[in-house]
Image (cartoon, rainbow, N blue to C red):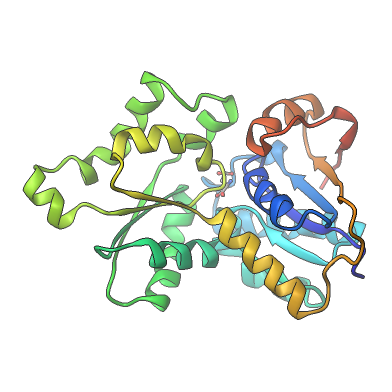
Length: 276
Ligand code: DGL
């Protein structure tokens, strides 16, 4: 069991930002990553559809054999974590929302948090619920930013055009007159979608230096390590583990765009086409 890979899935290549953090904190582990690129985006779909897609994607990983499931997609984590835990009771199932909520509660000083995510994640209120479970004294605003997903998938992450789109979404919260802004503007921005870390430099340029930008990837990696340690499931070998990628659509596109998110080249030979 300890030698089985950790399974992760996302609607596309966004979850590779989570894989990047996992590979750096658990270098000896093997990983099996599935990007359901044929059906991206999940974030504009209904809850029923997202649950169905998530159970199918996770089912493919479990069929191949994984010791743990990481839902590397905020949209699927928000609405499908319980159905997935019920569908796969024999392995630990972890999402990215809880770790992201915990990180934002630790970061905020003025108690004003804004969550940037897909429409479906915001509509489901999962972030708001998790944050209020940890801290009742904060104020949480959910802001759907659906255009960030295709921008990141296209590799358009910086420049005037991208910052203009970021500003169009964020300015209503951040461009109040100074004295009002000091009292009310959020001091913490949660990147509540695994695609959004690629836009972090543009988001930083729009919100300024004084704002914490929280990415759940690091906290998720810590949580995964804790779960594996507690259950005695950590890889025993000490040499570096590898990653196999599964995609439901074009392999070359997955390898090309995926490498931006992973921060490393992905070889086409390490990607397999699967049908769900
Ligand atoms: N990466 C997914 C997330 O974290 C969103 C992308 C999509 O809409 O499919 O929510």
